[in-house]
Length: 255
Image 1 (cartoon, rainbow, N blue to C red):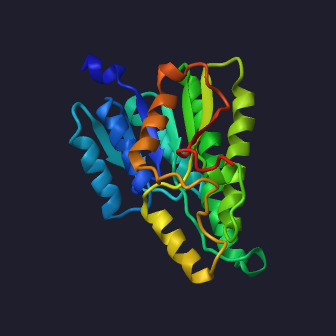
Image 2: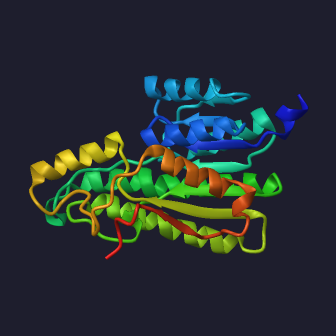
């Protein structure tokens, strides 16, 4: 019982996706108690089961729509009610949108991508930060992208949303200076996931110049690479990191 009371508690959004599920599994293996969120479905249930199979791990699913403030607020309230505290929050929910030139990009798709990626991160920060402070300190990690620091032809919705994510992280980090809460971002380059496969398929149909073109032909990363970086930022080993944008791309953005 004492070990359970001392276990760190985290919420992970986007936990049914390839990267989110890998993050959840890595944290479960480290003994975190987890509230995993995404759209309801088999993929979220599988992520929970994978975490429960890790030694000493506790995980549960709480489906939520990160574009709805009531849903995000309830994620945080539930974690605190169930476990008494919140030590970490990973905002990994994200969508890619479509691949079109700016003048052809559907406005409703643009708004949807901004809603999930940017508004979802904003709402997560808004409700997680007070709970992290109430626990005496903690770590918030947002999933940005190398698209947070560069452009990509045909991906205006995704690029705009990921620039917004990094801006939110930097703003919130400044607001936490001097306290015990840290806010950081991980910026993965192309990772072997269903999202990247879908972007590449759409880019191939749209013609040259779209998708995940890279300055250097570095190999794609794996979801576990991102999970390792997130686990580090959540850990005491990253205690002096606040407002960081941790690029994880195998050198693909160098030029």
